[in-house]
Length: 268
Image (cartoon, rainbow, N blue to C red):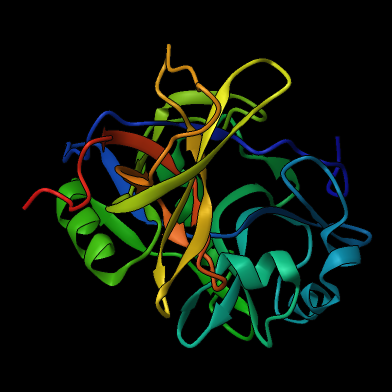
């Protein structure tokens, strides 16, 4: 296999909790689309599933001007809006600026590096790639995962990737040698309607107060075993955990934490 072919990206598992550990590398988890950049006879940019990212985001082609020849890189494409990533603008393809956050090197100097440990791949990456234009070389910390996670959470970013320094690159596989710490938020919302999916499961439609009226922010799976008698009755409160709000106010990756069917005010 030569540069130009699609390499399925390596994936991580979700950690039970942030940790700090010798022999591990911690870096920002950017809220974007995975991008495998292959620079051989041609410049190719593949999505996580092998689709041509250049067809969706022609601006990526500008990266070819600043990247070296004969490399395959792992990166994250983000929409950069007001100094931070904004996933909804990436989905809508409406951002004025896109960045490629590069964090791994899979091929360089005529050979594949995937069996090399992460620390060697990173050293080669830093020799071959520099931050310029839309290309950003990712940095991170050794051992101090909890400190980085605290900083990332305060900044309102997506999370942290933890990688064992001696880990090889396993294309298309999800491995415990790569783990992710995700930042979640939790708020109370009104359950104002219910619906049922084709598989028989129930959903609660949730909203918050906006401009004096109830505004829909999404839906969550109803508790296991819950059955509707035709509707939830009067709106009641549920605490929902979510990753972020979109520009339109909808919740991403929302899931139910607790609910208070007989309460009209959240607990203090």
